[in-house]
Length: 506
Image (tube, rainbow, N blue to C red; front, top):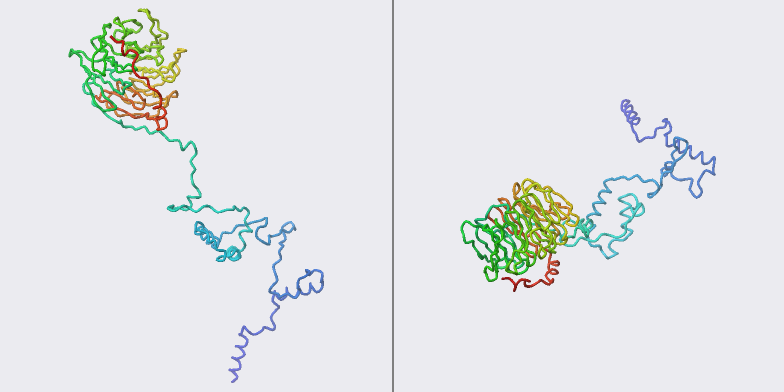
C-alpha cells in the first residue's frame, strides 16, 4: 500500500492543470499590478470617459514609439493618412482578377441585388479598409463595353485614332507592266526616236522599215506605211499636237507627212543630206534634225516648206524638243552639246543664233524634256560616258540640279499628274526610274525590260507611259493614274478640237 501512495504523489506533482503555489509571479501579472498601482496613485493620468476597470486582455500597445532623438513619430491610425506602404497580398490579387472579369459585363440596374453597404463590407473584409476612402486619385466614369465580335475587350480602351496625315491614301505603283506588245525587227539604235503617242490615243511604233499604229482605246493594230526600198529604215516618228498627222523621218533623208485618218501620205519633204533621227512640232512648223548636224524648219502649209536652217551641232542631232509655249527649241547632239534656239521668225535664214549652249554633259544628249507647268525648265540626260540628268533654267541659263543616274539616259518625260520626272535607261541598268520633281528623289524603279530601253512617251492623259526596248517589246505602265475626284475634274476641261493646219496642208 505504501508504494501505491508514493505513485499517487508522483502523479499529482506532474499534473499541469494544478496551480503552482510556489512559482514566481508571471510577467503579465506584474505589469497588470503595476498599472493598477500607478492609476490609483495618480487618478489624473487616466483618460476622461474611459473605464479604468477594463479587462487586462483589452489593453493596447502604446501608439507612440520613441525615436532615436527622443522625438516621437505618429503612425497613421487609419488608411488614407500621409504615409502609405502598399502591400500586395493574395487577397488583393483575387480582387483585381474579379474586377477585370466583371469589367465589361452589363451593369445590373436593380439596386436591390447588391447594395452599397454590402460592397463596402466586402472591400473592408478583403482589403482591410475601404478602397474608396484610401484612393489618392479617382477617375469617374466607366469605359464603354466592346462591341460584339471583339475577341479582346481591352481593345476598346486603347483604340488607334488615325491622324489626318495617316488617312491620306498612298499611291500604288505596280512593278509589272499593264500590257506588253511585241515589236519584232525593232532597230536597236540609241540615236533614233521610234515611239510617240498622239492626242487621239494612238501609239506609233517604227519597226525597221514600217510604221505601226496601236489604238489604245480599241486595241486595234494598223500598218500605216512601209519604206519603198528594202535598204531604207525609219529613224523617227512624231505626232502633231492636235489632229491625226504623223511626221516620219527616214534614212532616205526625207520627212514624210501622213494623214492617219485616211491613211494617206500628204507629202514627202526633202531637204537633208543625211538620215533624219529627230522630229518636233510647233504648231505648223515641223523641225527635223539629221546626222549632218543641221536642223531644218519646215512650214507644212506652203509648197516651199524649208524656211530656216539651224547650224550649231558638229555631229548627229539625236534630241529635239519644242517648249510647251513654243518660244524655244532645245536640241541635243552626239557632240555632247545642248542648244537652246529661239522661235521661228520669217526670213531668219541660215544664220540663226542660239540663246544658250550647255556643254556640261560628257556624252551624247538624246533625252530632252520640257516641264509642262514651268515652261522655262528643261531636263536633259547624257549617254553612257556621262549618265547625268541635268535640270536647266532657260531664263538664267544656269544648271539647277545635276544627278548621276549611274546609267545611260535614253529618254526623259515629265508626269504632270504627280509632278514627277521619268527617265529610261540603257547600259547598265536597262530600267525606268520615276523621280519626284524638283528634289529628284527616287519614287519607283521599274525593271521589266530585258534589254536597254530606247524610248519613252506619255499617254494623252499622262496616266500611262509606253517604253520600247532592245528586247523587241513595247510595255505600258499605268503609274500615274489620278484618283476619281481629280479625274472627273480634269474630264470637265474643254478639249481643243481640230487642227489649225487641217485645211491648209498641200
